[in-house]
Image 1 (cartoon, rainbow, N blue to C red):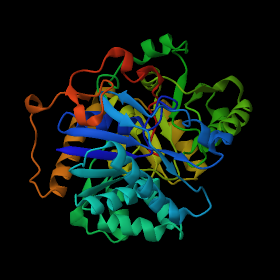
Image 2 (cartoon, helix red, strand yellow):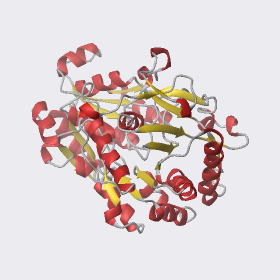
Image 3 (tube, rainbow, N blue to C red):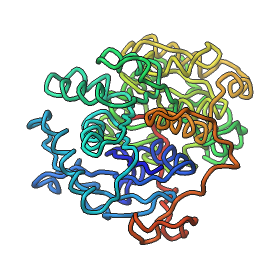
Length: 433
């Protein structure tokens, strides 16, 4: 089976830390079927003048990422001008790319409801193949509230053969937009269990130069207001005077980084902003912490929560998106309402001092690996083709696909050369877009 995955939330050489969850799931999915990725990059006249859009502007047209042949076609995008046109323009751009470079796929998957999923449905209908749309969080919770976008968003979701949601809450959100529940599958993201596993907290702190006698709360993610980075600092400022033994560390970067730095300065050395870190260093900070804090205003199912639980660390988070699905027991952490700073501060102070058994956290959470997540995704794709979903034993999995400089039509099975592998050292384990 040949699958074309279309998404703008995927890494490239200029922005390697973007959407590691898609990178890992798609790479695992390639063990079951042939995959090509159109990791699209928005373009409009003068885009290079704006820092937000120029980051990926110099990305190569083709590269190999974890064995996947990835193209980076540009699509015409009109930011804030005519959002209702972005879906049709995206589809037209991808049709041109498909006609020039790509054999016809058996299934087209759009990862993010709009404009990616909309374009996937348009292309699939033109080619007479099934379309699967994967939804992540803000594409349903936020975009569906925008009058200029909602009609096209609904059209794409309703005409998709199947929709894959990363949480039960998102499934209900998709259903509210007119998609029957029997066409929606919940496929949770996975976790790299070789990297995120229970480790000795003292050893991790020593490796990071942190005192073993202090308590440590950790935020990992984009430094954005909507992700709750500023709420984490504000809540910490409330609890700090009564708990002089507690510190807060924020790992990540983002548009509100300067605001976070300004807020952190009021608390001196007790708040540390590390910036973006390699994935292995994220895992070490998770191992070093007493609890993770993620007070997002909206979410899908953030991978950092899964990674923390797989590391045996409790979580304080907001009751949004798929987080309650993951924090299914009070033993795993606490949930508070988004924006409720007093409740967040109290939960953070409890989490910093509450004793717990990391191995029990891992056992209760039952976090799945990326192969299990990819297998569930594969079964959804099979269902879209009218084929009965089946469990695929590991012994029957196909080798990871790579394209060593050859066009997609002349693929060969082999591991990617080390010089062409995607730079793992630049990955940041952050939550959903």
